[in-house]
Length: 133
Image 1 (cartoon, one colour):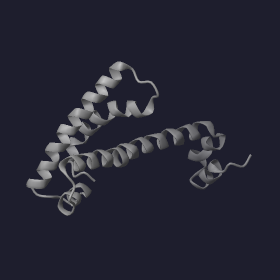
Image 2 (spheres, helix red, strand yellow; image 1 turned 30 degrees about the vertical axis):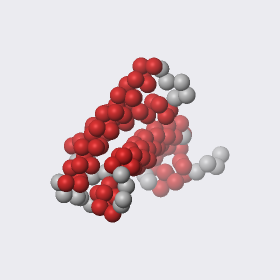
Image 3 (tube, helix red, strand yellow; image 1 turned 180 degrees about the vertical axis):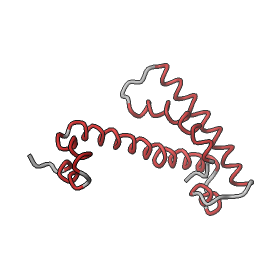
Image 4 (cartoon, one colour; image 1 turned 45 degrees about the vertical axis):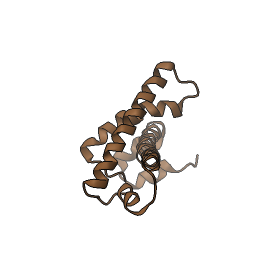
């Protein structure tokens, strides 16, 4: 989506994880606020440099490259769009996937019928997911 190289994805987590605390808590600590603010400033610098790489170093097939090529957005608007795309696309998806795994594992642990799935085969799994008593 952003055209960020795969080996730089851990950096996205380093920027996003502190910022996520701002969204998931009603009263963040002062330390968490400062950490998140610093991470978001680093992300802004990083994404500005990345946008320049895409703009002048050859575009890829990412959504961000398409926006750079086909829009009249200012640099600030492009950076804001990139942040929105990161938050809505990458981070939200990563957290939703993680939450789905936690929910599935919790269901398998707490559903008595799931204990028989490995012994009974895949047809038994349909009964595990049924909500009938």
